[in-house]
Amino acid sequence: MARFLLVLKPRAAVQPSALIEALAPLLQALQAEVDHQTTAHLSAVLRVSGEQQRMQLFADVQNKADGIVLELAVMSREAMGRGAPQTLAVFEELANQAARLGGLDVVFRSDRDGPIP
Image (tube, rainbow, N blue to C red; front, side):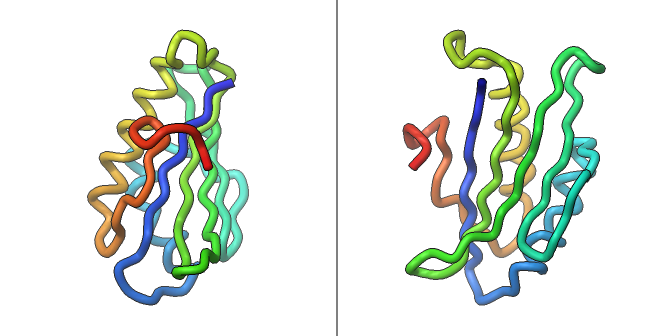
């Protein structure tokens, strides 16, 4: 099972619901179908290559010692033994789209920074 994590930290104080709502352009760009959403959580389905590869996107607002962060995780059934190339490609697009969201800094990328903490 493949899992990649991106952690974003807001530059200013913001409500959890505003972080989730700010994901709208990212979700649209990834053609994600939201299946559950609360003020601090979102889950969506991503379909890659039609129905061949189904992936899940999870967004969670977490309280950390130095403030809140937004964790974005992409998961699939693709094997990590071969590097999960399809899932990694979707994750890279997710990271590119997240970089376009204003007011957020990337503080962790599991593909760059190592294992998921």
